[in-house]
Length: 450
Ligand code: TYD
Ligand code: MG
Image 1: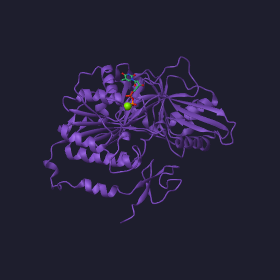
Image 2: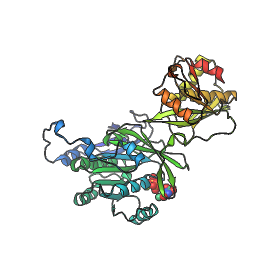
Image 3: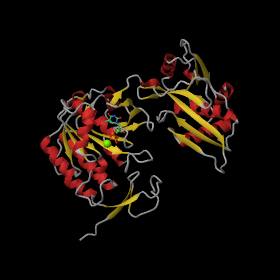
Image 4: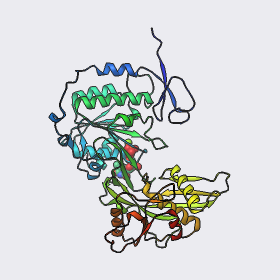
C-alpha cells in the first residue's frame, strides 16, 4: 500500500511545499505552513464523475442578462455588477461583527420570491437568525434555514430543496468528510469550497459564501478561495463607525473596485445613495496635516480626508505607519520628497491615516499624502477648502490621473474653492465655476504652495 503523502500548505497564500519550513517561500509569511494529506487531487477526480460536457456554440447560449436577478438593493447590485448571477459563487469577507450576516439576511429576504433561498447557518443557531430577521423586519419571509456544517450533508439537502440561492454563513465553519483536518484549516476550506463551486456550476445555483478576515485583512486562510470563486466582496469600515463600504475586489461578471456604501442602523443596513462626501468632517479652522482628496472607486468619485502626523522620533529607525494605504507607497513618496524636494524626514516618525476606515489603492492620492505630510512637518495648514489629487512619478513629476474633470466637478459641487491637480488635468476649454484650479508639473512646485 502506498504511504499516504503529506503536504504542507501555506494558510496565507495557499502555496504547497513537500516539507515544513518556517517561512513560506512564495509569500514570505512566517509560521503559516500547515500539514495536510495530499489526497485532494484524487477526490477532485472522483467528484468529477458526471456526464461529459457537450460541444456548444457560445452564440446559442442564453444571454447573460436573463441569468441575473436584481437584489433590489441598488448598492449591492452595483458591486455585483447588476445582480446575482445564476451559478455564480460570491465570497463576502469582512471583520467579525461588521454586518456580513445582516446584509445577507436583508438580501435574501428581498430576492426570496425570485430565488428561493437555503440559508446554511454554521455559526449561529436558527433562533439567533430568527431574532435577527425580526429585528430587520423580515421575519415573515419564508426562508429555509439549515444548521449544518458538513458540506456533503449540506449538498444532499440542497439537492432535495433545489434552492435558487445557497447562502453559507460562514465557510470557515464548514468541513468535508473526505479530509481529516479540522474545520477552518486550509485544506478543509479549499475542498469544501471546491465542492460548493462544482455544485453551483452543475445546478446553476447561485452561492454566497461568508468568509472571515484575518487581522492582516485577507480572507482567513488561503487566498486560494479568491481564485476559486467568481466574485469577491470585502466589507471595509471604521471600528465603531457608522458606515460600511462593500468593495468588489474581483468580479467575473462586472467591474472590479466598485463600491457600495451602507449605513448601519438599528434596523439593519441602509443604502447611502450619494456617498461622495460622507467621510468628510468639515473643520471650522484649517488643520495642519489634513488634506482632502478625491478618489475614484469603480464608477463614482468620492471625497476623502488624508491625515498625516510627522513627529520627531526617539527611535533609531523612525516609524512609517499607514492606516488605509500601502506603507511602501509612503516610503516611496518620502524618498521622492527628499530627492526632488530636498525635505528630509530621516529623524521623524511619519503616520498617515485615511479617515473613515477607507482604503485607498489609487495612485491619484499620492499628491494629497505628500502635502499632508509636508503640512504636518511644517506645521502649516493647507486650507480646508482645498482639494488635492495627482500621481507622483519617481522623477519628481506630477502625472495626470484619469477622470480629472469629474473629480473637479465633484469638488466644486461640495463647495471647494481651490484644487491642486496635475497640470494635464486642468480643464482646457472651460473653467469650473467657483473653483480655482492650480496645475502642477513637478512635485517641487507643491512645496511652494504651503
Ligand atoms: P453581523 O451581521 O452579525 O456581523 P458579521 O456577520 O459580519 O459578524 O452584525 C453584527 C453587528 O451589527 C452587531 O455589532 C450589531 C449590529 N447590528 C445593528 O446595528 N443593527 C441591526 O439591525 C443588526 C441586525 C445588527
Ligand atoms: Mg455573522
